[in-house]
Length: 207
Image (cartoon, helix red, strand yellow):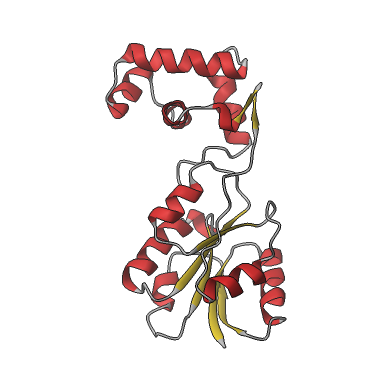
């Protein structure tokens, strides 16, 4: 029997996940909470085998940061990150936090119970990439890594000069990348770009 901690701010999702796991008969849900703020504290007692961690939790607490703390202090605990948000960096950030598996709530052919069962048996279940989105006339996969960095800085409200300093490139290089982004998306200005990216949750800086 595996003892499970669920961190999920949506009551509907939380209830659905609980039902799926309990139906497996090999999972015991110790507790379910809405915020990742104190998730690592709940792991202190040594009775948690598996944590299901949403990335965007109550009070804007980042599940990724909480996951990093848990895996740092309790590496033996298995941790499955889960999200419905298509933010392009989440998979990489979850890997950097030493998470064991990653599950998209609405874009996976596998249910959460199977992901958990296979994770506890030693597998690491990861999607090949984040969900494909349309950003203007472009696909989210059309952008280079550097262009994604520039878009993230634009979403953060930074000027061309500030972006150049952050990325350690010239301002002309920033302008070059933005011109390429505009050509790919068909947007007339960066305000349109930022609005579309934020609305579709392709870039979520605070997580």
